[in-house]
Image (cartoon, one colour):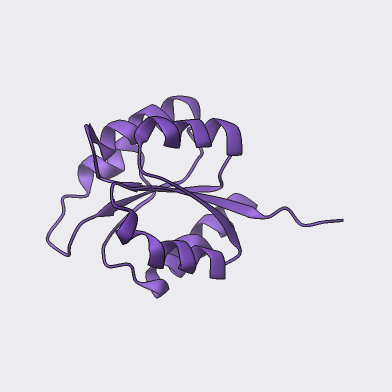
Length: 126
C-alpha cells in the first residue's frame, strides 16, 4: 500500500521570503505548493486538499486573518499557520479567534517549522 504524500500550501506576498520554508517542508516530506495571491491560494485548497497551510498575515489587498476566516467557513479542520514579518511583539488573540493553529515570524526557523508540523501530524492521527 502506497503512503499518501502530505501536501502543504504557502500563501505569501513575497516570492523571495518563502524559499527556506519551502525547503524545510520538503525535507519533512511535504509536497509544497506556493502562491502569492489569495484567490489562487483558495483555489489550491479546493483542488489540492493540502494538509497544512502557511499564510502571510500581509497579503496584497487582504489581511491574513480575513483569509483564515474564509478558509474556516469551508474547511474548519484545516490547520492554518500565520506568518508575520519580523520578530516584534504580536497580539495572538485575533489569530486564535480567527482559528489559526500557530503563528510565527520570519525569518523561518527549521526547528519551529518541525515543531508545528509534528504537532499537526499528531493531531491529524488522533
